[in-house]
Structure formats: C-alpha cells, structure tokens
Amino acid sequence: MKNATGGTKAILVALLCCLLISVGFNVWCLANQSPSEYELSSCRNQLQSCESQLSSVQSQLQSAEDQVSSLQTQLSSYQSQVSSLQSELSEYQRYGKLQESSLKVQDKTINQDHGTKLGIVQFTADYAGYVLVSGTSTTSNGYIMVTCSFGSYPYNDTEYSFGTGTTRLVPVLPGTIRVYFGNHNLIGGATATITVYYVC
Image (tube, rainbow, N blue to C red):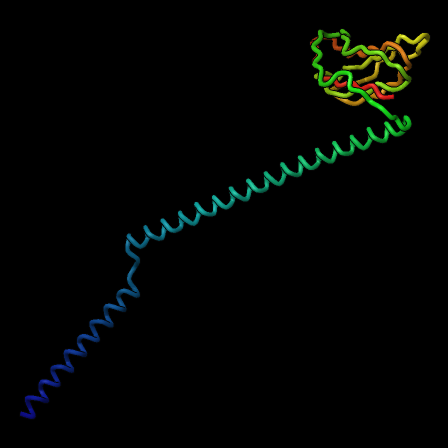
C-alpha cells in the first residue's frame, strides 16, 4: 500500500516537472521567436498614424505662423495709418486754429481720359480759409488744382501732386472755389475717389 502511494506521488511529481518544463519552453520560444507578420503590420500602422499626426501638427504650426505674419502686417498698416493721421493733424495745426469745416463732396468718383482735368466740386467761400482734399486714384500722375474767383488770386494755375492718394490742404480767399482732379498720363485714363472739405 505504501509502495503504491509512493509510486503515485512519483508519477505526479514527474508529470508536474514535465508540465513546468513545457511551460518554460513555450515561454522561452515566445520570448525569442521573430515577430509575426500581424505584429509587424500593427507596428507599421502605428508608425504611419504617428507620422500623420506629426504632419497635421506641422500644418497647424505653419497656419499659426501665417496668421501671426498676417496680423503683424495688419498692425504695421494700422501704425502707418495712425502716423499719417498724426502728420495730417500736425499740418492742420501749422495753419492755425481753424474753427469751422463743411463737407462739400464725399467720395466722389472721377473717371477721365489720359491727360485731362475734370471738376470735382464748386462752391462759394465767404471767408479766407483752406480747401482740404483727400482720397485715392489709380495713377501716380494724378494732381489736384484749386481755383478762386478772387481778383489777382495767385494760385489758380498751381497743380498739387496727388499721386495714387494723399491729403492736400490748399489756402483760398473768399469767392467762387473750384476743385479739379487731373492726370498727366500719356496713355490710359485714371479714376479717382475724392472728398473735399472747406475749412475756415
């Protein structure tokens, strides 16, 4: 009876040893075998996903940089406009403390042939003052002319360079005032958008 029990134990021990050896062998095989094609494919997919995400992040970064550059350009433009307005204010202040102004024409569009001059507005000035002309044009050869009916007025033939757009302050005496826009183009006409104030 004891021998039978001892034999059974020996068999169980032998079987347990075989099982441990088998498990250990399988673990060793799994640890040392080459990766399967499925595993390689999975790794490739993960790598492609990472590359796609990296490309997306780079695109977003480039877009952000473009937006920053655009905002910097706009800021520079706004600063230039502020500087221009400050210069205009300084120019007005140089001509003294003007009390009143009246709008004579706003954003009037002038279309003309090359080498011509067209009237923008005509009005009566009751006091000596200034004509303020501002706007834009499509030619660098544009000019402004302001005439006055006051006797011996010395500036009737003066052409004030206007270019593609600026602001001109022209002194006037009481009388009938006429404001013109013209161009010295040899070929091709010009279009201008003009605003005129009378300041006294």
